[in-house]
Image 1 (tube, one colour):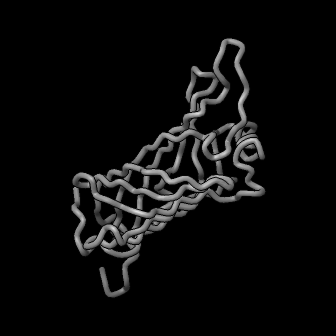
Image 2: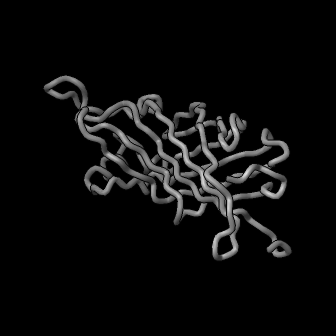
Image 3: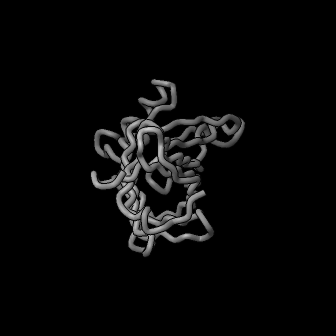
Length: 188
């Protein structure tokens, strides 16, 4: 496991082929439905000597939502949920980053879904840093965060005859991030 040091300072970009931003929610109060956003862009500006000067920005294309069910995906893209025609992006922009334990960070920032922005805190674990076979310096992160979807205007639901609702209000966000450091030509 790598500790933060000055050599890690700089820009890190999410590797979309090795990054997953997903979610899970209960369906009919008894099963879990999982999905992901297939179009993810993220940039970490890291200042290892002054972590408070670091930033994270994540952009998800809402139309890329994928639950492996086209009918459900079309409903999620509709005005009942993400309304992708009006709000094409979901954006997170950090305001503070703190190391709370070795390789464990609390990233606080604004999450905007539809036209609603709320501050959220996301606990993130740095899994490691190493050179890949292509010579890229790569860092791996994981995080989960539970949110109430109704806080972001995602209100649609149906009551069940047995009590409860069709789609849970609580949704768990799942982050599996691989980021590559942008290195100059002089570095190897």
